[in-house]
Length: 314
Image (cartoon, rainbow, N blue to C red):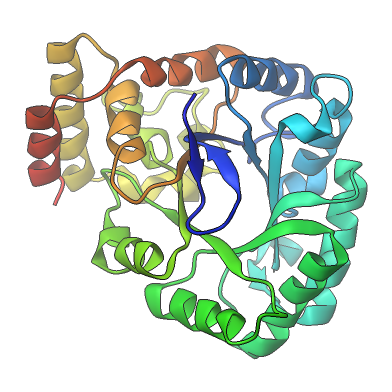
């Protein structure tokens, strides 16, 4: 699998990243190990998690695989901090105190003394940005994070954070920004994709398959074993179960049929090969599903197909 540099940093990531949002909850340890094995055998090195995934269970599963399924130095582990769900309510707290405490807990769950990429999970409109960035400085200078990044920041928020960090060589440089991007959500093209390239940030695309909708699994309804049927994921998928999204899904399915590929492969290849994208983060519930995802590595979309999908998804 092709490796790509994250912006102007020295961080090298596989062009597909392994998402682990369901690990420890919908994906048990056995299935997680099967996924990880398939991913590494395909040449992938980038594993993305968060302190909030499964209330830390995702990190625990990954920690249990280190030293048994793979060597620590063979993978780039990224995690995030700052978002919690007390009583089911999404809460963002990017204070220095909270972030550093979360980092130490993440390292304990991951059973490692460092992460390759530590990311602030979301913008905090209350905490001063300088306070948040001081936590990144601590993680970077202490060696607990080899690189630091941001997630779900807008273009101006990303530019502000990067500018502050670049103002002093003693501060931790921002290596990457992680944002949702797919044929069903191209808002990143409004500003943040160009911004990241301009200021030298790696661009990590989450939900490149439109939260699973672009696979075509919802074309005739909601399968009982799908995320849209799960109470804890239904709100995650619902925004893309619309008439407008359906039109794009059908276009992807038609392109896939004509090329002899699956809709999943077409949708993922479109994101993966968009200029400026460092890595597209993919998630699956089973090893079999992930192997289907990894087949996208074998294809490149013809320019005429890519252009047609560009036009119909705008």
